[in-house]
Image (cartoon, rainbow, N blue to C red; front, side):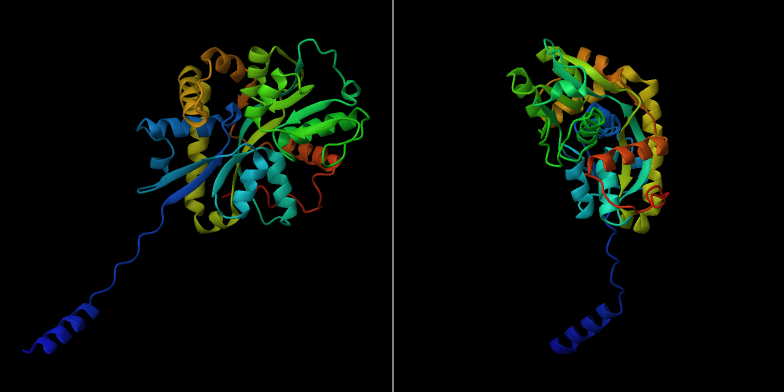
Length: 323
């Protein structure tokens, strides 16, 4: 057999061998914030880092999770819209804003996560107690349109103040990243901060702040997914939601262990240690629950529309679609 004929024979033989099917991408991209109100994500990340993953084994063989941290909800929703995330922990208002802005196309609520943990903090020597006391004053919130930003604006509006969509008006609502709020508050450049734990407790303990409004029962965090991800990976989405529910219950039943994991992950993400006593105190303001808080979200829809930052009349029936 000549060299050419041998080569032809080999090529023909190879053509009869079926090509291997490319392995399915088994990477789930998940988002969260470095806040206590996103405890499930912090605990899950810490357990994976310790070699004891909670969620990944429950998704099925070969699945892994890539976690991404954001300062506030609007940024995470932009990532959902850009298909850079599959699921994320987020405050209800940014999720609602995207839902209405996309005419109900994105996102979908998988589960509840946390109630409470948000508050308005003022300097200890401040006499402010009512909305009118903030006339001409500056209040910081994590990001324009995030859940605490909406709550702050609605509170001021209910008190009779005029607040424009950019934060100007009778009082000034100043979107400021959580890590920056503390320093500005300590320097006396802010008259109040409306934020979430652990920043509420840090403002109290490290800057002598005083809480005057606390959102004890309001929805702080929910778990949402990208619609296309649900359509393409519905089984994986269901498993993620189930793992989240189990982890939520574990956190409730093992508070000391959960707090250690939260502290370790916050240190890993922020590169700064958080006092364990601060975490223990702050977490008392939180209620962790995987139940979808439909009534609470409906209430926040009304508040957001009042501020002018949430527009549109799209029905909410698709928002709660099960995975």
